[in-house]
Amino acid sequence: MFTYKTFNNIAEDGLAVMASKKINEVSENPDALILRSHKLVADEFGSNLSAIARAGAGVNNIPLKDATDLGVVVFNTPGANANAVKELVICGMLLSSRGIVDGINFAKNLDSTDADALNKMLEAQKKTFAGNELAGKTIGIVGLGAIGSMLAQASQALGMKLVGYDPHISIDSAWRLPREVEKAETLEDLLKQSDYVSLHVPLVEATKNLINANNLKYFKSGSRLINLSRGGIVNSNDVIEALENGNLSKFVTDFPTPELISRSAKNSDVILLPHMGASTKEAEVNCAVMAANQIANFLQRGVIINSVNFPNVSLERSTPHRLVIITKNEPGMISKITDSIASLDLNIAEMSNKSRDEIAVNLIDLEHEASDELVSQLKSIEHVLKVRSINTAS
Image 1 (tube, rainbow, N blue to C red):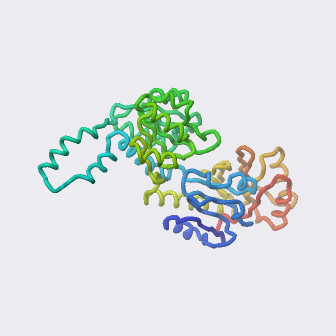
Image 2 (tube, rainbow, N blue to C red; image 1 turned 120 degrees about the vertical axis):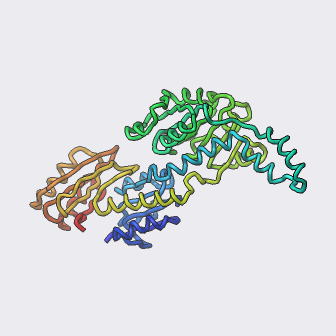
Image 3 (cartoon, rainbow, N blue to C red; image 1 turned 90 degrees about the vertical axis):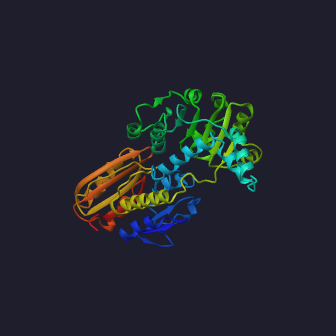
């Protein structure tokens, strides 16, 4: 019987998946953790821990190296909140183009006691909030994964021209893109031709301060920047300077900082949102269900899909007896594993070995159940991080 523990509020639909798979919730030493924004630390890892799932896309709140070193697989849920973020980007483009925020604030303070005077005031002032339409404008999408590709499709439907930049685009993502997307060779090429720039990349070392003074100078005069991805991707002080010198017209972000809050209090060129990019009921349900299914697949079958630190691996079950062996990606590991199995007169029915960076995962179906002796023997092999024996028939 497998167990899990949650941090944050996880949608009931996701917990129902766990219950349907007979995976029980516990408070201590679970096999799996499910979380959203909780800042996880390695001290919260129990001895039974095999998997962590983030019900969302980013995993910068999870200590990946610690998890990897212990043979703990970390999942995220790419695409589960993509529609929610896509819709908010479109909202952000409109907010930055049509004077909507200023118009709302103006309307709240109108004197409504005289209808005729009110109508005259509205007619006289509406030009103050005149803006631009999206149709015919160019949107530059940085990062063409699940969100970026959906945004490209929606922007095309709005009559916009499309430019995309993603040096690491996957084949699946490429297939989802409209053929009208112009592929930029460099980030600077995209910035030079975009009226709107929307960022959809993870926060990793290579993307910290991705937008900074060095490339803000390439933005078209009057262009707008939208960041619903991660706060650290944009250098806030450099953006404020670009707003002041006219390189940038508006900045819409889901990640307020002290300097941006100060700017927005005095200027309308910064529009701040309170971390609401994926805050829809639908997105929360999608993320929770996806995370739960990924954990169940791994705990019960050893199958890995959408891991950020391990390779994807699957194997159709051929016997009820499966070993899941996680090792460092070192030469000779497969032979050491198979030699140990053979030394106890066990036959391998099927196996799959996949590697990614410094980690390798082995799924091995045996003709007979693995003994405790075999599991102990496998665990003692140098560079073996974790060994599990599971009955895939259950």
